[in-house]
Length: 338
Image (cartoon, rainbow, N blue to C red; front, side, top):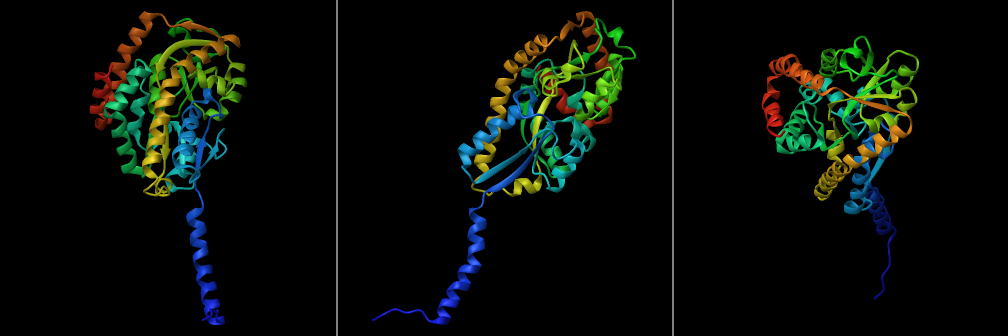
């Protein structure tokens, strides 16, 4: 008995192979996720402090089945534009603070209220006690975007200026760049400066040309954007301990197959744990670095901080909670976690 292939059988087999081949190729191809960051790709940029362990854990747990494409330095556009790209799915993931999302989900603005958190330990406890989960649900319900993890900026936010500031009274009339959210603007109106919203990627030139007299930010960001070149004074208000979040859009999350989802979530949780553990040491390193570059720091008189906190409670927290009552239980959890 001998075997042979008829022309019809050959063509049928070839057709079947042609039909199946693209399916096989698609299955073998890695899942590609575009990840946007406005910060430089270094540890002082904070975004990378979370992204680096995330990418390492993805490689460890998912092998080459998930490919991350990282776009730092605002390569994919201004943050306000990237927010919309994440919503519609043209960008899969975004690393940034909570503030930019407050323009869409205003309750996120609570996280930017001055002196809400006393430290990153306080912030961690509150987030892990249900505050983070509540914000994740809020964002997912309204936009379809999920929060993968809560890291931190590199250090508490303080004020950086060209001229020395020794007291809050000396901030009167000083134009400071702030994030474009009501919570930030209201906080700095109470502090006494003139808040001026400007995108982070335009800040260096704005300080250099005198559009603003300084800015408020964490020491890591001050290094990452080389803002020490245009300011050399730091006024240590430590007014906000800012969370840094990893967001993923609905379409981006849908790309992850069910068998890889546990590994994907585990990688995000590990990145959050590692970045939180590192941030304190990196903050100390950042402040030492800035001092070495000529930045002179001044502490705010304790009595002035105490008065500021009292005014924040009366003039900022109460009206904010009245306007956004859904944040009241979250505010209580934050207070209880102190």
